[in-house]
View 1 (tube, protein in one colour):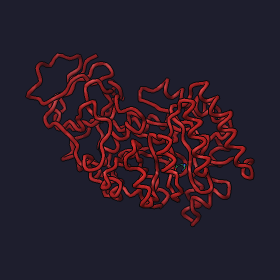
View 2 (view 1 turned 180 degrees about the vertical axis):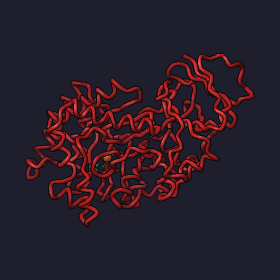
View 3 (view 1 turned 45 degrees about the vertical axis):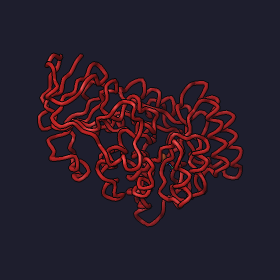
View 4 (view 1 turned 90 degrees about the vertical axis):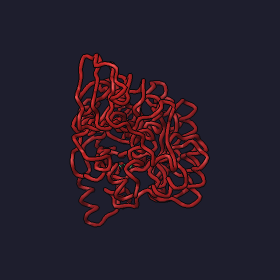
Length: 411
Ligand code: NIG
Ligand code: FE
């Protein structure tokens, strides 16, 4: 099946396929072609260029894209979309004055979701997560990372990862899976935390690896959760089982987790709402992708990741949703891009780079998505007739998407 889009008002994020990520000042540059064509064959982009270079109109499907901008689909590198039920009562508790940390200390938070997950079957979890996957695809997401971490026992963690595998096998979008057994300490391990770390290292990681259920390993490195030594130990054991480290770090406190992430060769360090001067220095010279989650800051009313400083220091930055029932019940990358511009003072070009090419890097997917390049996935957002690129973050409450294509098929 060959599809030709012609008369495209502007084809955005056109890059050589060798570009894996962009950082510092380069993030302000978003290459585009005005009045363009784009050829899709089966799942892939096979050609594109200026209309003046279009040789012929031979294709099974020819689409006049006059007035439409086309972008690569969003790459959401951090989500927890497999979960049971919701936590809207905690949302009301926070309105009434409790903090996220206070709710967690009372046995709510992650442990609340773990209890709900334990009571749900694989099929129920799959059905709930499917609704969320379908919703985010309609919102323009073409690649996504999904974490476990609401199981917190060998059995329940494997159940979650199997649901992620079912999603991978069912939906066309790229799905990467992350083992996050180190998301919180189960109540029965409150007084013997090292035993839970041992359970993760000695039983969970080997079993998850044996069943080949995780691409990445993640830890919530935070006061009251996993300290730096526990984090390092878990990431290292994960690495010996071929899981690439990622890390939840500096959400509420800076406790040295970024250093551990960098030392362990993490692909990304995520959250970063609280950054000390030495944290920026640690990131420099590393290959790690910092990831900001502005809709989490929005929802919890916590500080936003200092994106301006990160980029002005010459570092890269990716944007992701953190879609989960506690801190971000939303998988809307359009809102993330707008919020990054409005609250974190990223330019539209920077935010779009962060949500596409850099998000792809944070999932190890730069070779297949995140930009318009020959050989990459034909996962595209086709916009309604909007005046300019700036309109995308500017009109933050409007649905500007006309159509979404995931790997060559309209959804
Ligand atoms: O990334 N910070 C840790 N984990 C999630 C929230 C999990 C939850 O509250 O259910 C996050 O924000
Ligand atoms: Fe998260």
